[in-house]
Length: 228
Image (cartoon, rainbow, N blue to C red; front, side, top):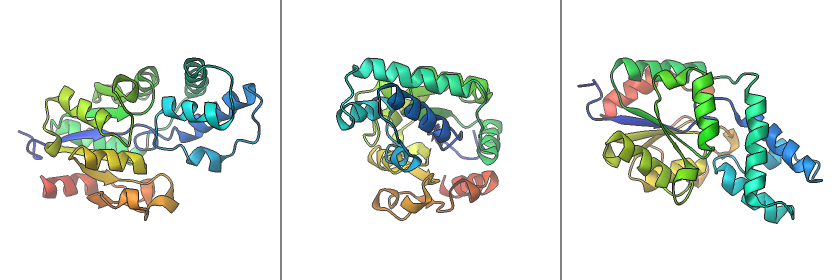
C-alpha cells in the first residue's frame, strides 16, 4: 500500500496543473470578436475562472446578446483554444514533480475539469501528463459543473475511491466549494491572488495564498502524509 494509505488525489486542470488561463482568455477574446464584441479584458476573463467552458459561453450568450447557439459557441471556443494550445502549454514544474511523487508511491489520481473532454485529453497528452493521469472527467459528462460536486464525485467513482479518502487540488473558488460539498479535502492554490481570502477558499484544508509560487511538491506530499 502507498505511504498515503487509501488516499486518492484529484486534480483540477486549468490554472492548477497547467498555465492555460492565458490561452482560454485569448480563445474567448477571439470568439467574442467574431461576434462583434470587442474590448474583452483579462479582468473580464477572471470572472469566469473556475467554471466550465459550457457555462461560460452560456453566460456570454446572455451577457453580450450573442445570436449563435450555445453549442456553436462552445465548439468555436474549444477550436480556438486547441489551436492556441498546439503551440505548447506549460505544466507548472512543482505540479509535475508532485504528480511524479504520487505516481512513484502508487497513489490513484484523476483529472476533473470544467474543460471539454477533447481539450482535457489534448492537454494531458501533449504535456505527457497522461503517463500518470489516465482517469479524466469533464464537466460535460456530469449533470452540473463546479461549484456543484458532480465532477469530483464522478472522478472518485471512476477511481473506486470513497469521497472522504480523496484530496482535491484546486486553483479557483468554485472548485474549492465543489470539493467541500463532495466531502473531500482540498489543497487550494489560488490562481487569482486577490480571491485567496474570499469565503469560497475558507473551506480548504490547506490554503496556499501565494498560489503556484508557494506550492512545493515535497511540502504538499509531506502534508498529505500527515493528513493520511
